[in-house]
Image (cartoon, rainbow, N blue to C red; front, side):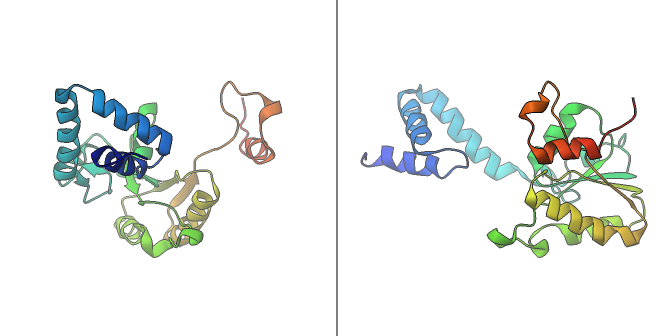
Length: 197
């Protein structure tokens, strides 16, 4: 559509997850009309994240040193380990303020259609961590979709013989939701996960 640098920028922005062609075009023209100082700050932040950010050597969360801040925190318990798919899932759980254990980031979920099997995830590293003997409970906090369920089932089967308690995050109805709008699977899980009041 456009020529030269603006089309190159639109093409690169369009490669980002969740950014479609129209959004890429809108962002590109925003950058074009933005103050040069703002654009330089954005470019600097992009360069800085590639230079400084890496994965924690213990849990594989994002970090700017060998270990992330959660792995360095001595107030956290080593007895409970929460397995998540991506670093963004750690942030979501941390926002609740409910979890005081450690994490393990798999780097995705089992998805045969995309060619992602157990060997493509950090499952071997997880098993090594679990063999240390400190973990008493493993919380499977993978996404409640087909891939997340497959990953959770696979991990549960692998870990059960180790004598570690394996739990799964509850799933069901969202707070503020209406029963009439819930799909059958969600409503079924809400019934399975019901608790005494």
